[in-house]
Amino acid sequence: MPTIPHSRPTLDQAEVDAVTSVLQSGQLAQGEKVLHFEQALASLIGVGGAVAVSSGTAALHLALLSLGVGENDEIAIPSFVCPALLNAIGYTRAAPVLVDVDPTSFNMDAGDLRKRLTGKTKAIIVPHMFGLPADIREIATLGIPVIEDCAQSLGSRYQGAPAGSLGTVSVFSFYATKVICTGEGGMIATNDGRVLERIKDLRDYDEKDDNLLRFNYKMTEMQAAMGLAQLRKLPAFISRRRAIARQYDECLQGTALSAPGCPPDREHIYYRYVVRTERCTELLDAGREAGIAYRRPVFKPLHRYLGITGYPGAEEAFDETVSLPLYPSLSDIEMKTILHHLQSILK
Image 1 (cartoon, rainbow, N blue to C red):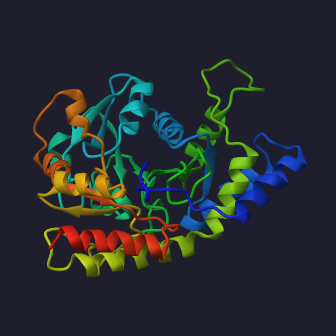
Image 2: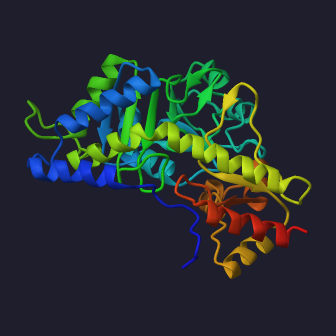
């Protein structure tokens, strides 16, 4: 195991107290804490409502179903992303249409997206990769429902608007190493009241007037209590992430590693600090020897899973990127160790 992991949750007594309080109350399943968590997140991003669920993948699945996605529909997604998007699309029996990415921002290439749209395109899933918002307004002009994937971008902003407030529907993940965590968990947010009610109906199957297919995607009270505690810390989490990013920026000046950029109309939260370099293998190996977990930011582009070609941006992004450790609980001592190591191998 590495001495300094690539990522880890940031927890303290506040989360312990929050979960303990729920356990002492005896109300463990979906209840008031879940409702309060939903209201708090909806208020934070400025939308009409939100529905808490058991995971980010469940959020994607219900978001697709709420838009009427089904068999023979096409869903546009970027290739340079985790396979959760493929899985959620597969649950609906729709077909993924992969889109190339900009190899500098790692976000969906709007120009390539236009070329791949067809009359069957029912929705576009747009992840804001590594904490940097995608060009969501341009994509929204295409007239196709947009699902904002904010699993890595809670707290970021695009042209002054919070990520998650600009699409038809937005989804969030609260996995253990996400921006805020509940261990597992997710959320769907929207301004569309009909979509919101559809998602609430699909989230659980009990006490319904019919036997339509529904799911057991509820969030527990323990998860929601933990989420509320984490949400209160979000400003401090983002401030710490940006402070660490500034240290990396300074360290990498004049080296073979290119720091991540950020257009002036966006606010990056640095969920991941992804550098560009032609020395990826060397950096990964050197980190392993030093006990520092540098990682590929995406395990494998989706087009490689599907055995198709034609995604030069995603190939370049995969071949030339490494993610450095960055999370609020990364200590000053650990940060100094990483910076010293980078300086020693980048001379």
